[in-house]
Length: 85
Image 1 (cartoon, rainbow, N blue to C red):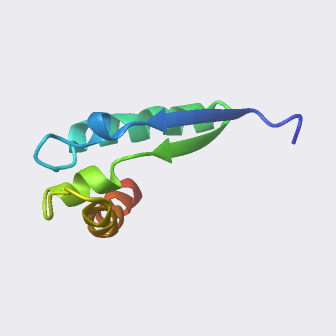
Image 2: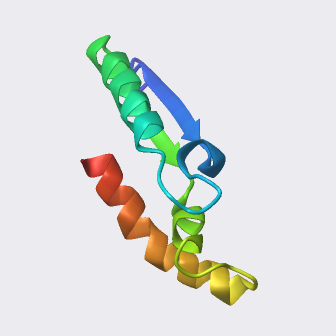
């Protein structure tokens, strides 16, 4: 792996998710295009994304740790579906 050209990209929840828990699709699409361009240049992008709790907060606002876990459980599939699309 020492010859691999790995780029680590950390994307925080405030970048991807609005205050009301909605995915910022235009931002996500722009990031996906940029990550694709990095890959096309011969790099291996490793994306670390936050946002599961923030996505879930739109459905179940998190007040406690248990609430945060529920929000993450609800938000994670939505977030991953948007990345997949």
